[in-house]
Image (cartoon, rainbow, N blue to C red; front, side, top):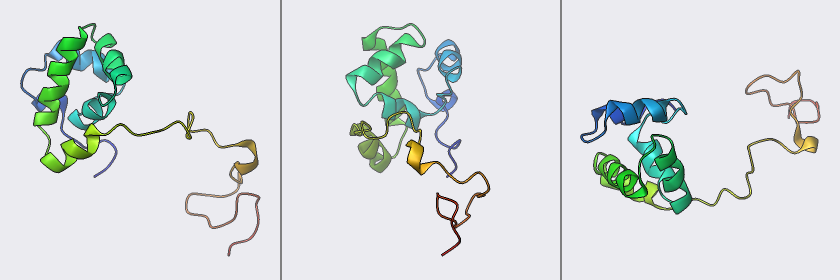
Length: 115
């Protein structure tokens, strides 16, 4: 499954087009994304702010999104993930990739030879 595949919010009962369009402005388009974000209280507040709905309403929407998923996927996404070690995804300065290295290039990050 590519990063863009998943269960579209448009296919889930109870989701209004207005809510879907507002979330889509922030690239939230699938049930998997909604359920993953909604795994924490902070995520629920963030989701509720996007379409401008109450926390109770976003809980209802997250539950309907969860119901659209397989039990295994829903269970996996129910658990909050600790991302505190990952920051914003930027690499530390000493680990910057070699500008000449392409995707899949086996050169080390300091520009060394392949191993």
